[in-house]
Length: 347
Ligand SMILES: [Zn+2]
Ligand SMILES: [Zn+2]
Image (cartoon, rainbow, N blue to C red):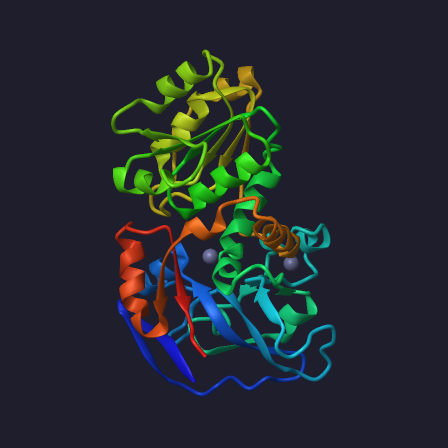
Protein backbone atom coordinates (compact mmCIF):
# COMPACT_ATOMS: atom_id res chain seq x y z
CA UNK A 1 0.00 0.00 0.00
CA UNK A 2 1.01 3.62 -0.33
CA UNK A 3 1.92 5.43 2.89
CA UNK A 4 3.60 8.63 4.03
CA UNK A 5 6.45 7.48 6.23
CA UNK A 6 8.02 9.90 8.70
CA UNK A 7 11.76 9.18 8.44
CA UNK A 8 13.35 11.88 10.60
CA UNK A 9 12.59 15.52 11.45
CA UNK A 10 12.04 17.35 8.17
CA UNK A 11 11.79 14.16 6.12
CA UNK A 12 8.69 12.23 5.11
CA UNK A 13 8.57 9.83 2.15
CA UNK A 14 5.47 8.70 0.32
CA UNK A 15 6.23 5.13 -0.73
CA UNK A 16 5.05 1.53 -0.99
CA UNK A 17 5.06 -0.36 2.31
CA UNK A 18 3.47 -3.64 3.43
CA UNK A 19 -0.28 -3.45 3.92
CA UNK A 20 -1.06 -4.11 7.60
CA UNK A 21 -2.36 -7.58 8.40
CA UNK A 22 -5.67 -7.63 10.27
CA UNK A 23 -4.91 -9.72 13.35
CA UNK A 24 -7.38 -11.24 15.82
CA UNK A 25 -9.38 -8.55 17.58
CA UNK A 26 -8.39 -5.85 15.10
CA UNK A 27 -10.26 -3.89 12.45
CA UNK A 28 -8.53 -2.98 9.21
CA UNK A 29 -9.68 0.37 7.87
CA UNK A 30 -9.25 1.64 4.32
CA UNK A 31 -8.52 5.30 4.96
CA UNK A 32 -10.75 7.83 3.19
CA UNK A 33 -9.46 10.97 4.89
CA UNK A 34 -6.96 11.87 7.57
CA UNK A 35 -6.71 15.45 8.76
CA UNK A 36 -3.44 17.14 9.70
CA UNK A 37 -3.18 18.02 13.39
CA UNK A 38 -0.86 20.57 14.95
CA UNK A 39 1.02 17.69 16.56
CA UNK A 40 1.61 16.10 13.12
CA UNK A 41 3.23 19.35 12.05
CA UNK A 42 5.40 19.41 15.18
CA UNK A 43 6.40 15.76 14.66
CA UNK A 44 7.32 16.44 11.03
CA UNK A 45 9.56 19.37 11.92
CA UNK A 46 10.93 18.37 15.35
CA UNK A 47 10.11 14.73 16.00
CA UNK A 48 8.52 13.62 19.25
CA UNK A 49 9.59 11.23 22.03
CA UNK A 50 6.70 8.78 21.59
CA UNK A 51 7.11 8.52 17.81
CA UNK A 52 9.97 6.28 16.70
CA UNK A 53 10.78 6.64 12.98
CA UNK A 54 10.35 5.24 10.46
CA UNK A 55 6.67 5.59 11.34
CA UNK A 56 3.32 6.40 9.76
CA UNK A 57 1.70 9.25 11.70
CA UNK A 58 -1.81 10.78 11.44
CA UNK A 59 -4.58 10.20 13.96
CA UNK A 60 -7.59 12.17 12.66
CA UNK A 61 -8.82 9.22 10.65
CA UNK A 62 -12.02 8.33 8.80
CA UNK A 63 -12.50 5.42 6.45
CA UNK A 64 -14.23 2.17 5.52
CA UNK A 65 -13.92 -1.18 7.23
CA UNK A 66 -11.96 -3.50 4.91
CA UNK A 67 -11.48 -6.49 7.17
CA UNK A 68 -12.64 -7.57 10.61
CA UNK A 69 -10.38 -9.65 12.83
CA UNK A 70 -11.50 -12.80 14.61
CA UNK A 71 -13.51 -12.17 17.78
CA UNK A 72 -14.79 -8.73 16.78
CA UNK A 73 -18.55 -8.25 16.59
CA UNK A 74 -20.91 -5.36 15.96
CA UNK A 75 -19.23 -4.11 12.78
CA UNK A 76 -19.62 -4.93 9.12
CA UNK A 77 -17.29 -4.76 6.16
CA UNK A 78 -17.86 -1.55 4.21
CA UNK A 79 -19.04 0.29 7.32
CA UNK A 80 -17.85 3.90 7.59
CA UNK A 81 -15.92 4.59 10.79
CA UNK A 82 -13.62 6.92 12.66
CA UNK A 83 -11.48 6.01 15.64
CA UNK A 84 -10.55 7.40 19.03
CA UNK A 85 -6.86 8.29 19.08
CA UNK A 86 -5.80 7.28 22.57
CA UNK A 87 -5.99 3.82 23.97
CA UNK A 88 -6.07 3.72 27.74
CA UNK A 89 -4.97 1.12 30.28
CA UNK A 90 -8.47 0.65 31.69
CA UNK A 91 -7.06 0.08 35.19
CA UNK A 92 -5.73 3.33 36.62
CA UNK A 93 -7.83 5.54 38.87
CA UNK A 94 -8.56 7.98 36.06
CA UNK A 95 -9.76 5.20 33.74
CA UNK A 96 -11.93 3.87 36.56
CA UNK A 97 -13.61 7.26 36.80
CA UNK A 98 -14.09 7.46 33.03
CA UNK A 99 -11.40 10.09 32.43
CA UNK A 100 -9.72 7.90 29.84
CA UNK A 101 -8.01 10.89 28.21
CA UNK A 102 -5.73 11.40 31.22
CA UNK A 103 -4.93 7.72 31.74
CA UNK A 104 -1.46 7.29 33.27
CA UNK A 105 -0.48 4.68 30.69
CA UNK A 106 -2.15 5.72 27.48
CA UNK A 107 -0.85 4.93 24.01
CA UNK A 108 -2.15 6.38 20.80
CA UNK A 109 -2.82 5.55 17.16
CA UNK A 110 -0.52 7.60 14.95
CA UNK A 111 2.08 7.79 17.72
CA UNK A 112 2.68 4.38 19.32
CA UNK A 113 0.84 2.52 16.53
CA UNK A 114 0.98 3.37 12.81
CA UNK A 115 -1.54 6.05 11.84
CA UNK A 116 -3.74 7.20 9.00
CA UNK A 117 -1.49 8.88 6.44
CA UNK A 118 -1.66 5.64 4.48
CA UNK A 119 -4.10 3.67 2.36
CA UNK A 120 -4.85 1.32 5.26
CA UNK A 121 -4.57 1.41 9.03
CA UNK A 122 -5.14 -1.47 11.40
CA UNK A 123 -6.95 -0.46 14.57
CA UNK A 124 -5.29 -2.31 17.45
CA UNK A 125 -7.14 -4.87 19.53
CA UNK A 126 -7.10 -2.76 22.70
CA UNK A 127 -8.72 0.14 20.83
CA UNK A 128 -11.38 -2.11 19.28
CA UNK A 129 -12.23 -3.67 22.64
CA UNK A 130 -12.62 -0.18 24.16
CA UNK A 131 -15.29 0.72 21.59
CA UNK A 132 -12.90 3.19 20.00
CA UNK A 133 -14.10 2.41 16.48
CA UNK A 134 -17.12 4.65 15.96
CA UNK A 135 -19.63 4.49 13.12
CA UNK A 136 -20.00 7.66 11.04
CA UNK A 137 -23.58 8.83 10.33
CA UNK A 138 -24.52 8.65 6.63
CA UNK A 139 -24.77 12.40 6.21
CA UNK A 140 -21.23 13.07 7.47
CA UNK A 141 -18.44 12.94 4.89
CA UNK A 142 -15.02 11.39 5.56
CA UNK A 143 -13.51 14.88 5.56
CA UNK A 144 -15.96 16.10 8.20
CA UNK A 145 -15.50 12.90 10.22
CA UNK A 146 -11.73 13.41 10.17
CA UNK A 147 -12.11 16.66 12.13
CA UNK A 148 -14.19 15.03 14.84
CA UNK A 149 -11.02 14.29 16.86
CA UNK A 150 -10.07 17.96 17.38
CA UNK A 151 -13.75 18.81 17.86
CA UNK A 152 -13.98 16.17 20.59
CA UNK A 153 -10.98 17.80 22.31
CA UNK A 154 -12.85 21.13 22.25
CA UNK A 155 -15.89 19.39 23.73
CA UNK A 156 -13.67 18.01 26.49
CA UNK A 157 -12.49 21.55 27.22
CA UNK A 158 -16.03 22.93 27.21
CA UNK A 159 -17.40 20.11 29.38
CA UNK A 160 -15.80 22.03 32.26
CA UNK A 161 -17.11 25.44 31.28
CA UNK A 162 -20.87 25.08 31.56
CA UNK A 163 -21.61 27.60 28.79
CA UNK A 164 -25.12 28.90 29.32
CA UNK A 165 -27.61 30.72 27.17
CA UNK A 166 -26.77 34.41 27.26
CA UNK A 167 -23.09 33.99 28.18
CA UNK A 168 -20.42 36.31 26.82
CA UNK A 169 -17.63 34.06 25.52
CA UNK A 170 -14.14 35.05 24.40
CA UNK A 171 -11.80 32.70 22.54
CA UNK A 172 -8.11 33.51 22.06
CA UNK A 173 -6.80 32.04 18.81
CA UNK A 174 -8.48 32.08 15.41
CA UNK A 175 -7.09 28.75 14.21
CA UNK A 176 -9.28 25.69 13.59
CA UNK A 177 -9.45 24.92 17.31
CA UNK A 178 -10.43 28.49 18.22
CA UNK A 179 -13.14 28.49 15.56
CA UNK A 180 -14.46 25.11 16.72
CA UNK A 181 -14.66 26.47 20.26
CA UNK A 182 -16.55 29.54 19.01
CA UNK A 183 -18.96 27.39 16.99
CA UNK A 184 -19.59 25.10 19.96
CA UNK A 185 -20.18 28.09 22.24
CA UNK A 186 -22.74 29.48 19.79
CA UNK A 187 -24.44 26.08 19.66
CA UNK A 188 -24.67 26.20 23.46
CA UNK A 189 -26.57 29.45 23.25
CA UNK A 190 -23.84 31.98 24.04
CA UNK A 191 -25.16 35.49 23.39
CA UNK A 192 -21.87 36.92 22.16
CA UNK A 193 -18.75 35.17 20.94
CA UNK A 194 -15.51 37.04 20.39
CA UNK A 195 -12.37 35.57 18.80
CA UNK A 196 -9.15 37.44 19.50
CA UNK A 197 -5.95 36.85 17.55
CA UNK A 198 -2.70 38.60 16.83
CA UNK A 199 -2.67 37.64 13.15
CA UNK A 200 -4.84 39.38 10.57
CA UNK A 201 -4.37 36.36 8.26
CA UNK A 202 -5.96 34.12 10.86
CA UNK A 203 -8.77 36.56 11.60
CA UNK A 204 -9.63 36.50 7.89
CA UNK A 205 -10.72 32.87 8.31
CA UNK A 206 -13.02 33.90 11.13
CA UNK A 207 -14.88 36.27 8.81
CA UNK A 208 -16.51 33.33 7.06
CA UNK A 209 -18.44 32.34 10.18
CA UNK A 210 -21.69 33.88 11.38
CA UNK A 211 -22.15 35.89 14.57
CA UNK A 212 -18.54 36.05 15.69
CA UNK A 213 -16.94 39.33 16.76
CA UNK A 214 -13.33 39.41 15.62
CA UNK A 215 -10.71 41.26 17.58
CA UNK A 216 -7.18 42.02 16.42
CA UNK A 217 -5.16 42.27 19.64
CA UNK A 218 -2.41 44.16 17.83
CA UNK A 219 -4.82 46.99 17.15
CA UNK A 220 -7.02 46.90 20.25
CA UNK A 221 -6.33 45.93 23.83
CA UNK A 222 -8.50 42.84 24.29
CA UNK A 223 -9.16 43.44 27.99
CA UNK A 224 -10.32 47.03 27.40
CA UNK A 225 -12.42 45.95 24.44
CA UNK A 226 -14.16 43.10 26.29
CA UNK A 227 -14.80 45.31 29.33
CA UNK A 228 -16.35 47.89 27.02
CA UNK A 229 -18.52 45.31 25.26
CA UNK A 230 -19.78 43.90 28.57
CA UNK A 231 -20.49 47.17 30.31
CA UNK A 232 -17.50 46.69 32.62
CA UNK A 233 -18.53 43.23 33.83
CA UNK A 234 -16.14 41.08 31.81
CA UNK A 235 -16.57 37.78 29.99
CA UNK A 236 -18.43 34.82 31.48
CA UNK A 237 -16.22 32.31 29.72
CA UNK A 238 -12.72 32.75 28.28
CA UNK A 239 -10.99 29.99 26.31
CA UNK A 240 -7.31 30.37 25.53
CA UNK A 241 -6.77 28.31 22.38
CA UNK A 242 -3.41 29.91 21.61
CA UNK A 243 -0.12 28.95 23.24
CA UNK A 244 0.43 32.42 24.60
CA UNK A 245 1.37 33.48 28.12
CA UNK A 246 0.11 36.98 27.45
CA UNK A 247 -3.28 35.64 26.35
CA UNK A 248 -3.57 33.57 29.54
CA UNK A 249 -2.99 36.65 31.67
CA UNK A 250 -5.37 38.73 29.58
CA UNK A 251 -7.97 35.98 29.93
CA UNK A 252 -7.81 36.32 33.72
CA UNK A 253 -7.97 40.09 33.50
CA UNK A 254 -11.13 40.08 31.38
CA UNK A 255 -12.94 37.37 33.34
CA UNK A 256 -16.20 38.41 35.03
CA UNK A 257 -17.34 37.38 38.48
CA UNK A 258 -18.06 33.63 38.48
CA UNK A 259 -16.28 33.32 35.12
CA UNK A 260 -14.93 30.03 33.85
CA UNK A 261 -11.54 30.17 32.14
CA UNK A 262 -9.96 27.38 30.09
CA UNK A 263 -6.21 27.21 29.49
CA UNK A 264 -6.97 24.95 26.54
CA UNK A 265 -3.69 25.30 24.65
CA UNK A 266 -0.41 24.32 26.26
CA UNK A 267 2.50 26.74 26.49
CA UNK A 268 5.97 26.04 25.07
CA UNK A 269 7.64 23.46 27.34
CA UNK A 270 10.69 25.66 27.96
CA UNK A 271 8.65 28.73 28.87
CA UNK A 272 5.46 27.83 30.76
CA UNK A 273 5.53 30.14 33.80
CA UNK A 274 3.03 33.00 33.92
CA UNK A 275 2.53 35.79 36.39
CA UNK A 276 -1.05 36.42 37.37
CA UNK A 277 -2.91 38.48 39.92
CA UNK A 278 -4.27 35.72 42.12
CA UNK A 279 -6.66 38.14 43.81
CA UNK A 280 -8.67 38.28 40.58
CA UNK A 281 -9.41 34.63 41.09
CA UNK A 282 -10.13 35.12 44.78
CA UNK A 283 -12.50 38.07 44.73
CA UNK A 284 -14.26 37.30 41.47
CA UNK A 285 -14.60 33.58 42.25
CA UNK A 286 -13.11 32.66 38.89
CA UNK A 287 -12.57 28.99 38.02
CA UNK A 288 -9.65 28.02 35.81
CA UNK A 289 -9.56 24.68 34.01
CA UNK A 290 -7.06 22.72 31.96
CA UNK A 291 -8.02 20.36 29.16
CA UNK A 292 -6.16 17.58 27.43
CA UNK A 293 -7.26 15.31 24.59
CA UNK A 294 -10.69 13.62 24.76
CA UNK A 295 -12.41 10.27 25.17
CA UNK A 296 -14.91 8.12 23.32
CA UNK A 297 -18.16 9.68 24.57
CA UNK A 298 -16.90 13.09 23.44
CA UNK A 299 -16.16 11.73 19.95
CA UNK A 300 -19.72 10.45 19.73
CA UNK A 301 -21.03 13.82 20.87
CA UNK A 302 -18.82 15.58 18.29
CA UNK A 303 -20.10 13.33 15.48
CA UNK A 304 -23.68 14.05 16.51
CA UNK A 305 -23.03 17.79 16.51
CA UNK A 306 -21.54 17.61 12.99
CA UNK A 307 -24.32 15.33 11.76
CA UNK A 308 -27.01 17.66 13.14
CA UNK A 309 -25.38 20.65 11.42
CA UNK A 310 -24.99 22.52 14.70
CA UNK A 311 -21.64 23.90 13.60
CA UNK A 312 -20.34 24.97 10.20
CA UNK A 313 -17.95 22.04 9.98
CA UNK A 314 -17.50 22.18 6.20
CA UNK A 315 -16.10 25.71 6.43
CA UNK A 316 -13.51 24.63 8.99
CA UNK A 317 -11.81 22.56 6.28
CA UNK A 318 -10.05 25.04 4.00
CA UNK A 319 -7.83 22.68 1.99
CA UNK A 320 -7.64 19.05 0.87
CA UNK A 321 -4.58 17.37 -0.61
CA UNK A 322 -3.79 13.90 -1.97
CA UNK A 323 -1.36 11.73 0.02
CA UNK A 324 1.46 12.43 -2.46
CA UNK A 325 1.35 16.11 -1.52
CA UNK A 326 1.40 15.64 2.25
CA UNK A 327 4.67 17.47 2.83
CA UNK A 328 3.38 20.50 0.93
CA UNK A 329 0.20 20.32 3.03
CA UNK A 330 2.12 20.14 6.32
CA UNK A 331 4.23 23.15 5.32
CA UNK A 332 1.10 25.12 4.47
CA UNK A 333 -0.36 24.41 7.92
CA UNK A 334 2.94 25.43 9.51
CA UNK A 335 2.81 28.74 7.61
CA UNK A 336 -0.52 29.53 9.28
CA UNK A 337 -2.30 29.93 5.95
CA UNK A 338 -5.06 27.41 6.60
CA UNK A 339 -7.72 26.20 8.98
CA UNK A 340 -8.09 22.43 8.84
CA UNK A 341 -6.21 20.62 6.09
CA UNK A 342 -7.35 17.13 5.17
CA UNK A 343 -5.42 14.46 3.28
CA UNK A 344 -7.89 12.63 1.05
CA UNK A 345 -6.88 9.13 0.19
CA UNK A 346 -8.48 7.93 -3.03
CA UNK A 347 -9.39 4.35 -3.66
ZN1 LIG B 1 -5.33 15.88 16.54
ZN1 LIG C 1 -5.61 4.25 32.69
